Length: 432
Image (tube, rainbow, N blue to C red; front, top):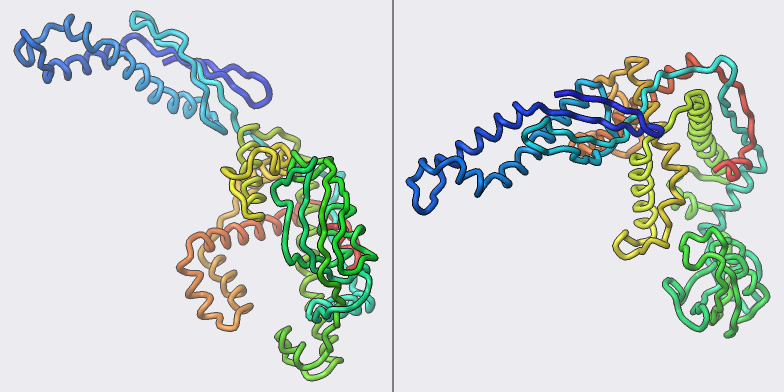
């Protein structure tokens, strides 16, 4: 077998394979002899059918089988011997299948890139520090009071922060469209949960029926509605005002706080915010570290792998709104809108794989056990959690990846430069 590798565009490669006639002949002789021992053809005794008769009757079928077998056997050998890592299935073309000449075929594939991890001496990642101010605690408490408050009907015009209960029906050119209507829909004005102009048109209205016009944004997730104007028939049934929850033992119980007075309540809120901040600091720092690594290590990712990742992201997005690929259509979350994020994800995954090899990181069972022990303390019954997780293979694999990433980050902290970046708690929302 002779193999030639030709570099095409980016990560595409053409593998040309030539298989000697002798390999074909061996298979053909073996198969024809096997058929001869079993063939039953009128006019001939079993096992004595002339070879030319068998070749005339079964030759083409045998030929097709042999060509397929030769490709199936030689392709894995060709990529292994040439240390090629395919990113997807090959596109095979048979160039010559004349049994009297060497069998020739080619396979076009995309390969995974060869990555030698680099660490920049000139750039640094941001190590985040988040500051909590008194005003942030006040806002957090106010938000809790609103979320645990009760909505009460009022005889007033609808204003920002009021909740309205509505029925609505949307039409485009007089025709209804998917997801165009709802009944007894609760909408907090100012939440920006509807398309631009929808909530604004309800502000100032009292319970009544009226029509409004809105234009779907150009980047709307459903492509056939992007930039289109729609008419909505609104039936405003109720206007409601939030009666904030009181800071008392009932609220403490709802929030699972073992406290007795308002001062302790504020302390507990501050502690919870600090825990959230620690998590956010780690995540933001890690994200900055990854961005730094991707800039330093500039390599292309296989298009086929990016497409697979985009498809997974689209399926996840559809699932979140109760759809599947089968009933969604191509215009709902078009797959190309996920390409940029998918490419980043794939490049990061490939780089991670190489970094783990570079640092020779290996996860031991004791590492998993220690992590599970820490995690279990977050639950009321740690022993029960440990028992449950031990019987969950998927969750255990996820924990292993978390531990692996944790160890990788620790290694990276020792080789990458960092600089402190202090932000306020109130800025978090703008970074997410």
